[in-house]
Length: 229
Image (tube, rainbow, N blue to C red; front, side):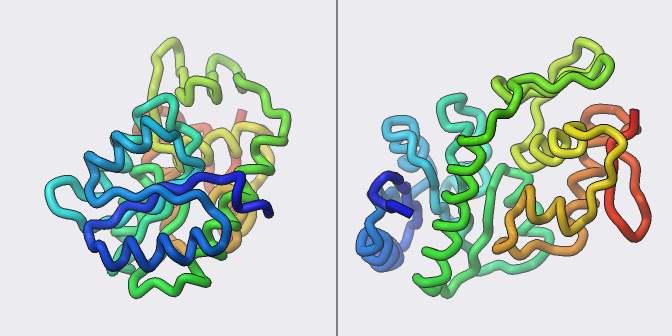
């Protein structure tokens, strides 16, 4: 991977963490900008449109979750990847982070080699996704998944989902009636290098059902999920 092709935005309210991680990422070849709070991060992200944002969760005034949620509402940044940095490793905080639109989760204290490995893994997936010829719209009966606008249309009603929920729904609906195993879903949506709680998929499916009001996503016990038509 040619790291020089990718721009990163590193956000943390601890200056020593910023300097330490920025040094290691730049040494790897990445272009790195920094911010010390959520509002500054949003402004810099809008100006520079980074490929990936490394975002601390616990920040004063505007925490990482709120920052990520606001970033994901900006059309120009919909494809920017997000890795959360946090000292909290509980399942519920991971789910909150993924609900906000995060792509990965790294706990403190941070090992630079591990972070760089996660960054490269996400960017490789980003390249693969960009190279795939995927339709802008996926239609199943009167149900439309619009990947260009990142919205779901069900019976004429437009619904906005967090990134991971949207990607999960799109994956299941891409092959109606196919059973996707939990392992395949984890690999396709979160990536092999991302560690998430066992209940993460279940929570995401439940939220999709609640928000869209559909029963098409069915559970295949002991295996995974499918989108029935």
